[in-house]
Length: 491
Image 1: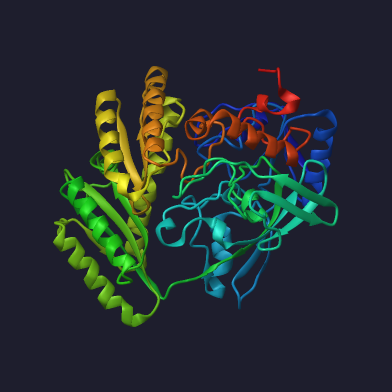
Image 2: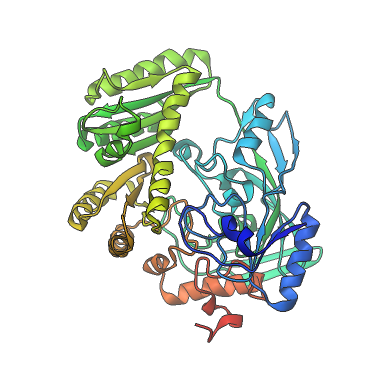
C-alpha cells in the first residue's frame, strides 16, 4: 500500500467544489485487505478517516478536514461481466469510462451514471449519481444488485438487494458477524428526484440506505450492478430556440409525447442564453441570441428510426427552432460533437472557478413539475438583482437545473452564497429539494437544514453513529461532526 504525506498530498485535497482540505496522510491501497489495515490504525487512535475515489465530486464529501484520506483509485479491477445477463462485478476505483470500455464488446454499457466519465464507481454509488441520461434511466440506485461494505468496527458484510428490508421504519438485518437493529429517521423526503441526506422511507431496502450515503456509513469495496444493452442506434439533437418560452413549450410537448409512448428520449436538457454566451467563443456555430434544448433519442429497433426522427423534426419546426443552426446528429462524429458541447459547460465553469480561486456556488435544485416555471422566474429575477455573472442549465426534463454563479473574487463569492440560500428556501417552499443528484457533502450542510428541522438531522447523526460507533468516517459530510458523541463540545 502506498502512502503520501507533506506536499505530495495537495492533489488529493481538492475536487470541483474548490473546498480546501487537510490530511496528515493519504493511503492508496492496492487490495481491499490494505483498507482493513489502514482503518484499524485510525480506529485505534480515533483518527478521522475519509474515503475518496475520482475526486470529481462537487460538494467536498471526499475532501478531508483532518486525519487520514484513503483513495481507492488503485482498486480498479473488473472482476467479471456476465455476457448473458449484463451483470458487472467491480471494485470501487473502476472509472465509468473503463467500465464501458470493458462492457462494450459484450453489447452492454452503463446508461444510468454520472455525467463525468472519469468518475469512479465508489463515488457514483456513494452519491447515488444520475447525470445527463437521468430522464430515461433515473439514478444508479435502480441498477445496483449488491454491495460489499467494510464497517469501521472491522466487519465486512455483503448487502444484496431484496434480502434485508425494513418493516415500516424498523430495520432488522442479520449477517454472519453483524446484526443491525435500528429505527430509521422519521423525515419524509420530497416525492421527486432528490439526494439530500440519508434515504429513509417505510420498508426501505438496506442497500438503498448505503447508496447515496456519501462515504459516511461504511467503505464500499465491491459493487455488483446491472448494465444496460447498447441501443440499436441513436441520434442527438441541439435545438436553438429564440427564447426560453419556446424552449419550455418544446420540452413540455416532448414530455407529453414521452408519456404517451411516442418518444422516449434518454436525455432532455436546457441551456439559457447566458450559458450559450459563456460557450460562444469556442463554439462559433452558436447563434447570437436565444436558448437551446439538447436531447438524446435512443432507437431500439430499426423501424423506429424514421418515425422518431420525423417527430423531432416536427417538434423543432412547431416551436420555432432555428433550422439553419440547430443540429440533428445521427453519425458517431456528429453525436460526439454535440455530446462534447453539452459536457463542456460544467468543465468550463469548473476551470473558471479554479482560475478565480473561489468556492463553487451553484444550485442542485429540483422542484415538482408544476412549480418549474415559478422557480425559473425566481432564478432569473434574483440572478439579475444580484448583479453577478451566472449561467443556468441542466436537466429540464426532470425540472432540475444547475444555476451557477460565476463570482470573480471572494467578495462576490460571499454574495453568491447569500442568494443561493434564497434559491433553496424558495425551492423547499415549492416542495423541492436542495440537492437532486450531487449530495450534501460538506458544502451544502447549511442548506440541508432548510429541508429538515434540527431534530431530524440529529436522527441522521444517530444513524451514522450506529454504523460508525468510533465516529471517524467521513466527518463533516452531510452534517457537522459535533453532532456525533465523540465530537460534542469540540465546536
